[in-house]
Image (tube, rainbow, N blue to C red; front, side, top):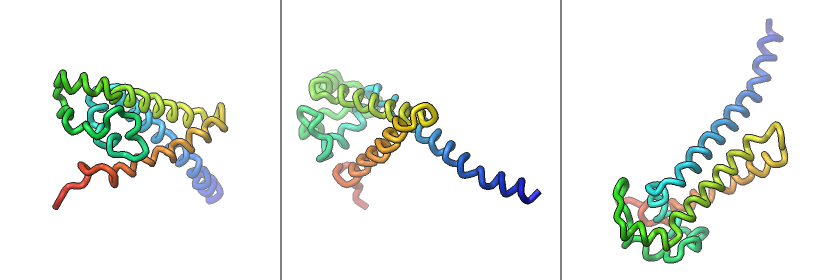
Length: 142
């Protein structure tokens, strides 16, 4: 009975790895899928525009404050500006990248090397944490 219990306990690490992998896949599919919607693309503009690592994806990153769409609001002139600024193109590209990461992580049984690359890209995606430092709107005065 003790051996059975110990065998069960020793298998929990594999179960935990599967749960974490599944969680990563779900989150990356979810966030990547959202990037195809206008409101999500509008929402990430301040972060991307202020990022020293990503602002070059936009044609006019410094002008974004004049063209902010509030959540759920569609201002035609702002939408046109965002289209020309590559806001929506970048967001869709980022969505494809995040969904690709999810797919690569999923392939761990079929293609371990591809899954390893996907896992490394998950770590790389933590660059987005720099948004907390580089985006003035993320700092709220007390």
